[in-house]
Image (cartoon, rainbow, N blue to C red; front, side, top):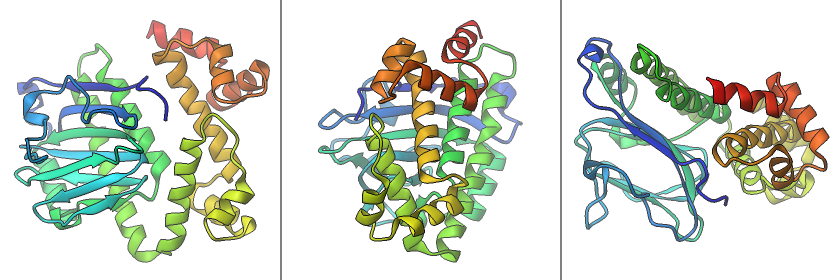
Length: 296
């Protein structure tokens, strides 16, 4: 797993202007926990830390998305459960809970904390503490929502908090869609796709042997490819390439990697091929995109 190059967190002070908005963002961030690294990372307020027994009780809702790695979860309403990649944790205020990554593996997580009248109405109606773990059906789309939210919380603009908070109901909508998919579609098929995405993340610096991966998942490559495209809209190789290109933006922006270093770290055969693929997906060359980000 990569080092913690893109860990990031924000905790927001009370904002009277947000009280009537219905959705109030309280905190947001992401953590990349390496194997054997302490969890959580340093720098979080005391009220968000786990106690000596490993428990924590919040006065807000939190949505935690595990994109890579594995661990365990337990709460007042749920016995100990295994957490796999593609799992979302929906935490309720006043409900003690505990979770952490497997120390041998680590994990990557994205999270948002929120409250508000509309937030309470929606969460209480569609979700429950007894089903706090949800397998995400549209993982790439939900990650995009989180990343967009994290982008807006960094912008020094009027109305920033409301713009960022507007992403919360969309995230919950994708979560609800995933919960419904688990009960209406082939669960085993969905699990294969989640495990394949996790494999791509773990092999982000190389090129996955897709036929070997299909065999590892207990299916033929043709069936795996068809199922993967049906679930994501992309072939496995297309999805892996898009994942690499998305990760490359983190390396360029947050790790101060050069274009050449980024291409090499992600296993591209040449800077030219990497730059061409980047521009095809994002509409700008890596250098142009990086310049735009630094000027915004």
